[in-house]
Image (cartoon, rainbow, N blue to C red; front, top):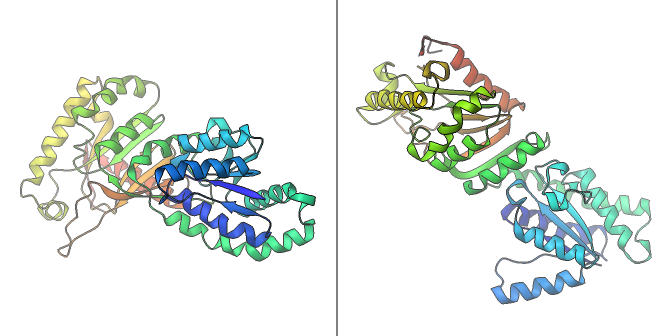
Amino acid sequence: MHVFLSWSGTRSKRIAAALAEFLPAVHPDLQPWMSESTMAAQDWRNTIGAHLSHASVGIICITPENAEAPWLMYEAGVLHGIGAEVCPLVYGLLPEAGPEPIRNLQAKTLDRDGIWGVVNLLNSKLPAGGLPPKPLELSFNDAWPMIEGKLDDFLRIKIAGIHLRAILDRLQVSGGPPQHWQVISFQSGFETHYVYDVVGQAARERLWLFGRKNRKLFDKSHKSFFSSLRDRVAAGLDFRVLFLDPTSPAGLLAKEHVDFDFAKQLADSFSNASSMLQQAGLKPGDHFRTYQLRRRNAVIVVDNLVLFSPIEYDDTDRVLPLTDNPFQIVAADSRTGQQLVAAVDGAWGKVKLGVMTSSA
């Protein structure tokens, strides 16, 4: 029986490849097929069309970063149109947070129970009903390690930063990463205008930043964020920004940045940010505080999600640049998320009159 594996993006492709190896090991009559990105454009379209037309079942491999991919929706639509069974397989999302067109197609999750459900579906579509329940279960148990051993590998695949907007949208719909999928890793993009633009638009309940100068957020390119900020704060948005105190001990400032005038840069950045907030109709004292300590992570808290990039140091123990660094997302209620939120909240709480009084 022909099984079409639909994928889009690196992780989705890896999942499809794992299924292509796993399914025939469960039952030799299952014949999965997936496209290869190395195919020539014309051959690619013709070949995919041919395999779509012969498929009895299509498995759509959905991850947060590809949940709105037009090609996945197209292939799912073609499969549905020819009467094939369409089975969404979601990874890193709750089934109800999948894309609207296929949300009601009894999606399965990429875990043991979900894959067992996929196998039962496929077995029921085989001629003569497939394997009886007990032999099917035995065959599944024998083959399961082929998938199980790759679940952690899927977690470690780093995603291009450009997918952040789509991922935040999906995760906010689902309430954060499910417990079995705790971390999302990005190749690059931290402390860029794009990231600040995305989190600024996404935040509904809270937006906390634990930065140094925070210069990129308080930039004219984010004018639309500040034009609506007063109304959003009035509606309940908890907006907090922590700046490195420009009056910190010289030794601390020297470890934080190579520039000799770093203290002035911090002071200028704080002054500019205060001016922008006042222009937005808000009091800087309600939303800004400074700290005098060495961070372990640069942190952005967006509602129930936490973006963070670990601080790295050079041979002289000086902080390396963070712009466009790799970063990760965790659920705020996960163990790591709770620690990061506590670090930001703790720094905020140790401040009096805008200046941190303890370096602990």
